[in-house]
Image (spheres, rainbow, N blue to C red):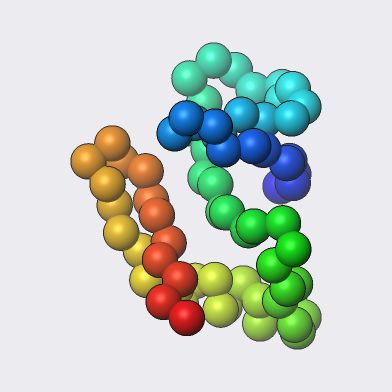
Length: 69
């Protein structure tokens, strides 16, 4: 797993650095706004909290997690 910063512009996430992936590789994206507080706890509890989040699938197949707080 690698963390990369991106900028959202005109409906597209633009990566701020290149990635070495074959063309057409499918990836998963978790969006955390800069300045958001970091999750507390160990890796297992953080991953369990992420897994428990509700998911919505758009018509394009992109999985969107909805923060209802």
